[in-house]
Length: 112
Length: 117
Image (cartoon, rainbow over all chains, first blue to last red; front, side, top):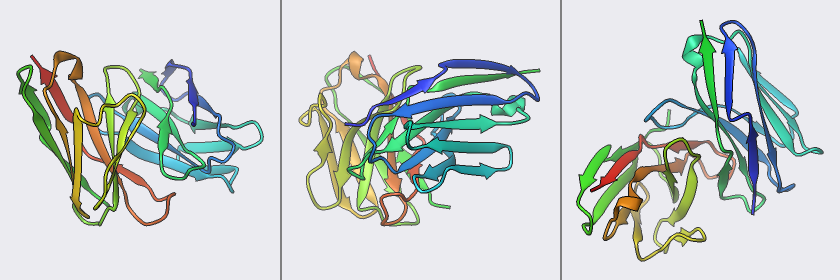
């Protein structure tokens, strides 16, 4: 089955700096890669996603890149703000098409 | 946007009792729903895939007789934790895909915090 690894597990940045979270996946047939933001005790919220036919996608301060050859994808948050502090999960939809496998999560802390 | 409603949000039960959690898609039909479990500071682990009108598909290591799933309609799936024990205490989250395509966005319920005493 699919295996998704995520790094780093914790990340502290100063407000206004950029944050980068990286994930790798094992199933070369995976074709959909969403990113979720989860605040403490709440549901994961989809913040951006990318499909395998696209190399990069941007939405305001958030961008995601995908390297299919290397089987890794990254989340980039620019001009970070305190409200960006949360746990971020990457995920990959396997080649079987139905199951979403999550990474281990990154605790992002944006400090004033 | 698509909304997935999950109830209850919190439940405390005694060891040995059963707890039912409901997951509803409010403004779309979901032939497939997913049940996840999340332990503190850990990732979401898929427990089972709930299929409307048929048996659920369980992930390896998840006991189907302990975690009963019923998906009787296109908008409702239920997870029953039977004979709950303290080690079952966790955050249970359901999700449903909005749209027929396998790449359609996955929307999550608010989760249920289960505490077994």
